[in-house]
Image 1 (cartoon, rainbow, N blue to C red):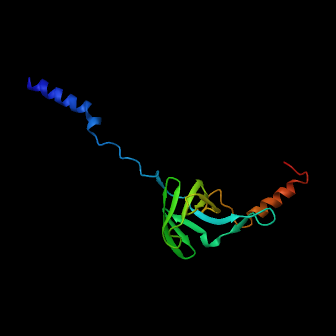
Image 2: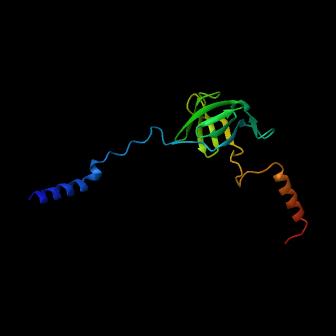
Image 3: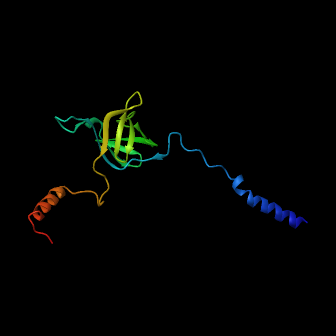
Length: 155
C-alpha cells in the first residue's frame, strides 16, 4: 500500500513539474536590451538641393567600440539600447537620446519626444579583416578596372 502511494505521489509531482517551476520573468520595460553595430556614426542634418546632401554635426559624431561603450575623440562613454531607444548614459554625449530606425541609422529625439532632423549614420565598421571593409584606394582601383573592361575587352 505504501509503495502504491509513493508511486502515485512521484507521478503527480512529475506531471505538476512545469506548474511548480518559476514563471518566465516579464520583459524589460521598453523592449529588449541590445547593442549597436560597432563602427563610426557620423551625425548630420539634411542639406538642400542647392548644397551638400547633409550638413555635418561633428560634435555629435561617435564610435561604438564594444558592447555598450562609445568614444568621442579621446573620451569614453556608455550607452543603453532598450528596444529602439538609445540613451547615452555617461561620457561626453550623456543625455543624448536617439531613435534606432534600422541597423546603422539613428535619429536624435527632440525634447518633445519626436524624431528630429539630426540623423546619425554608421559609416565604416570597426571590424578588422571583414569582407565588407575597403582599403584606402580600393574604390579607385575598382573604378579603373571597370573603365579598362569597358573598352570592349572581355573574358
